[in-house]
Length: 245
Image (cartoon, rainbow, N blue to C red; front, side, top):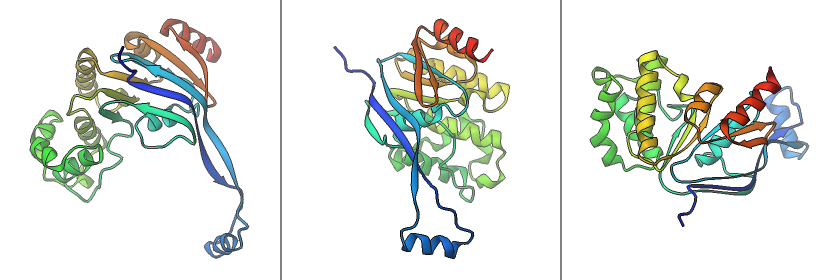
C-alpha cells in the first residue's frame, strides 16, 4: 500500500504578536534590552489533521482569515508548524503568491533561474529551461527585460510558468486560477488538468465554489483555524454556503 502524498498530524501554527507598544525605535530598543516586551500567540491553525492520497484533489474553502493560506504555506514547506507534524512526499509545485521570490531589478531570465532554484531545482537545469518557460508564458521578447518593467499579469504568467515547468508529485494551489486575463486562466487551467491527469495530488484553495465542485474529490471547510467539516464536496460546499447565505 502506497503512503499518502501528504500527511498532517494534529498540526497547529501560531504567529507571535507583540503586546508592547513603543512610540519610537529608541523606546522599542530600550524595551527589548530591559525585556519589557511581551508577546501573545495568534493561532492561525489549531489541531489540523488530514491525509491526501496520490492523485487526489482536495478543495479547501472558508472565509477570509480562516487559515487557508497559512495551511498552504505549511504544506509548501514555507512555514513550519508550531506543533504537530507535516509530511509531504515527493516534489512540490507551490502556486501561492506567484513570483513572491522575484527581484524587480533582475531580468526575467535571471529571475527564472533564481526562482527555480528556490523551488529546489538545479541552476543549470533552470538555465536550460529559461527559453521554454518564457515561451510558454508568451514572454519571449521580454526575457532580458528587468521585471520592474513587467505588468502584474506578466509577473503572474512568469511565476506560474516557472512553478509548473516540471511534473510535480504535489500541487499547492492558492487562488492562482483567478490571476491574469481570460486567456491565461484557460491556459493555466489546462496545464493543471494535465498534471492532475498525470497523477499529481492537489490541494486547491478557492473562493470559487463551482471550481471546487468541478475538480475536487474531497473538500474541507476551514473556519478560525479549525476544520469545520470534511468530506464529499457537494455536502461541504452546501453546508458552507448555508452558513454564509
